[in-house]
Length: 277
Image (cartoon, rainbow, N blue to C red; front, side):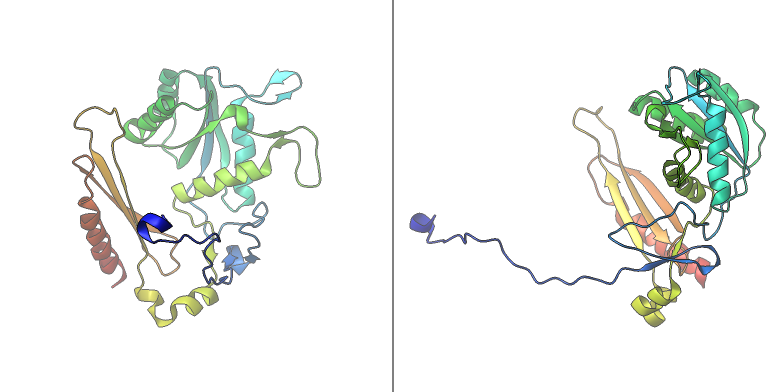
């Protein structure tokens, strides 16, 4: 390169000046503050800032979905998963009870949802391994046909504690269930935690009440997808001055185009203005 172009390459990596930002504090129920260290923090024993609207937790295991554990020499049943998740949710401030539990096929799952009451409920669906097709089928049944909250888990990866220790009793792993409790609480309209008000005021000052946080993405067809497969453009926008509630807009558009992002972004700005003015 030096001879042909007159360019000399450095033999050292480039140095760039950087700054370590102060880590924010998370605020839970009753303003209980948890400091973050090394991008992690203990959540197992905290209560959500605001509990979601959830009364019953059900569980359904698809055929052949294996559980990692045994109790009294019998395979673990979905009802125990539902019971342990209900206990975890209650410990985080969501007063919920264990509901129904069954094992069967996709068709049986559809019938299972059809016979349930219309209470505020969610279903844990245990899958046999990871399958995009099965996951899509479950979500289609839940979202489009029955209108129920659902959450899929790979049954073989659910940790089970066989001996009581200093952290938890015998049963499904607290940390694992707490991670899913975070998702369930958001699905049902709750708020898991907030950034401390002092931190937000320090960052945004008088602009806090007029700040809108947006997130956008476009999913394009994969190579080999059918001709005419659309792209999907989505935009979410914050709805409160704690920046924990986000509403979304979605558009289908011609494959591999980006135009709808601008449209959905403007929609979120207008709707947030109407809600807060």
